[in-house]
Image (cartoon, rainbow, N blue to C red):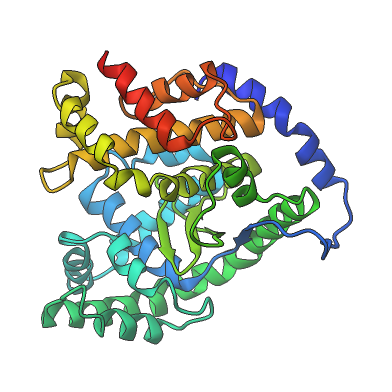
Length: 352
């Protein structure tokens, strides 16, 4: 994020943040934010932390590096040292079981199965849910390793660790929820107003704290959009996350629009566009979805601009920044033209 954007966002959010800090502890029942922040929960943190331990010590020490944790925060660096120390103290059998769990799958695959469990679910609930799910198609040896390792990891290491950290994260969740409620944050209504599209579900966003500062996970079930956040996440981060998630269903109808499919075929001749697509995805990922991804990311940037007054100078993909600037330049008004039409017009301008 550029300095210009940070400066503008801090100004835009200063009123919101300080009003939250100066308020009483009571949360108004009249306010109805569509974002709820929750503390630590076993159904996310148990497997995610085991996966983090695997990456730190075995699979991806360059990304999950000591320097990253040290530069992130003092709290995160202590967590890193715990991950290293705990792994080193495990016997060979348990290290092998951990390796087997994540050799061909990551934590998202497992957590996506159990995300609908109750927040107070047990280790046994987690294991039973995963091992009884046919979609994962786990071989019998992996089911045994899952049962063996998660029980061992929880009993020997994680139960005590999460219990010691629970009150710290619960307090942080309460503080963010208070600010969201006081300011009556309703991102869903804002997205619908700015896009001119009524979403097919009355979405709610749930943010769970996790120990992992390196990466976040996102899930969806029923009308819930779920994300993990780290201890360093600000109210800006919490409000910004749904912009991208809520933007995705806005473009659903475009995916089977005949004109869009024609444009997608023509865009395959754009060398820079195709080059990044080939770098990021396999051939199993449809090219038209890649075209949509650029629009989704660009519109999420535009929503932040309209919500915060923020500006962007970087691109996540190829045309997302250009689409964001295009919407700004034409002063996009959903009362005058549809999001679908303006998206088609944008890609036509790219091809001209």
